[in-house]
Length: 397
Length: 230
Ligand SMILES: Nc1ncnc2c1ncn2[C@@H]1O[C@H](COP(=O)(O)OP(=O)(O)OP(=O)(O)O)[C@@H](O)[C@H]1O
Ligand SMILES: [Mg+2]
Image (cartoon, rainbow over all chains, first blue to last red; front, side):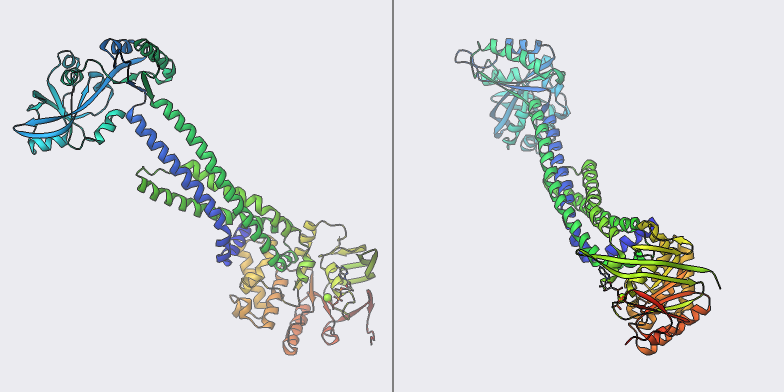
């Protein structure tokens, strides 16, 4: 009997293709919206989270403006910061532009970055070839350099630059490594590298300080071991910095990506809730559309219902037939919506440039919602049909 | 005399109209035996349709007792009435009442679906019934591809499908021309001779005469035999 009911309900949907389609349009749009919006928002946030993580979670960037008496951080300050519990190390950021010369070829405005061994320990894939700097390079202010492919092309025209020498600011440096173009980088050099059209080199930061003629460091990154104790560790960092700058206000600035990530997570939760709310409203409207269509259908088919009853259909059987029809309609809307939503997500992901991922929560939400709507909004019309008096129904011809 | 299949005693049907009760059936008595072919003959407004609704278990009387196949029909739930209709009654309507989207065979299968007959058997039974009414060539035609007479035959096949206790026909020739009407009435006669019990409701004395027994209904009362109404 159930099989017959399913067949009859389905048949009736097919018999009224255009009307069925228009009826489910509301559900289609609602489900498409839920799936596309939630998936895209999720994808964008996941992707930016990933980039932030790549840029360095578990890192605190300190911009030390200093005071008129003390500009930047001294070696001692950096040493104190490295001694803090839960701090893996401190990586100074030092960057300026200079010209680079090889065999009479001059490249102007090359970005010179000073880094220490901590940077290479905590950042993956900085170089594609060669070796990274170690603590000895720092202590002996070695004249070693890593260059990027941009500069390598400009100076060596495809020859292997490894082991060659280049002249920066009048001093000869030996090339020990080639920088990886694809390197996921820390936040500061990421900003820098975007403004390094002529290429970039990295030298030991101690060497860089001598070259720039400065004694203090203005930007550092503090690498945190266990991010679960971020807040406590930041408190300790602040107390060291406060002492270093005599508790002067605005003498330094802390940039903490983890708190930014927390904020984004909250934002994502809010966005998802809001989108779900909007989509739920559109599904509600879709549901009312289905209910309306079902009521029309019951009225139109009064005679048919009366006839079926005269031929022995029990009220329950009529009710199931109509209920199934509305469930099928909304499920159909849900499935079409899911397909559309995923297609839109796929296209949008491609355009935005994030990886396409099927968001099962969103699909479950969309399809589940639409099925529920079929039951809720189909109930009353189905009940009405089942209660129709066959005499009145048959008389209406 | 053969087995009694329908026994109505003092059936009253009244409708509440405003403050007053309008009595449509005024204590009707009727006994029908297996194998009879009865016409219920009466003018418009006499209570024919009301009578048919009660016989067909689409409605229950206000008072009186109605036994169908030995079962008391008064005070049954809608669900039970549906089951009784499925088993005991084969309806034939004036306007055929075929579902336009379904083929002749599918239309005949409808009452079998509600009687929970399995699909394979349904198909066989439906084809058998359509053969019986002479439509073996038209099994897959839709109603709009059939003439009025053919449509009424499909309806008759449908009424026969569940092998009901009573074939209940309401003005079965009302929508047909005289010639086709005659053919349908001859089919009724044949079916009666094969042992089917038929109750036919009509206002047309010429149609009523095809039956073996005529019961007149006039203003809510039943009279056996010939009645002269002006
Ligand atoms: N649901 C109802 N409510 C009130 N009065 C009704 C109802 N159904 C029928 N009647 C009344 O009962 C009387 C008999 O009606 P019924 O339909 O049985 O007549 P009929 O013999 O079938 O007439 P016709 O040949 O025109 O179909 C009529 O006066 C009608 O107005
Ligand atoms: Mg009538």
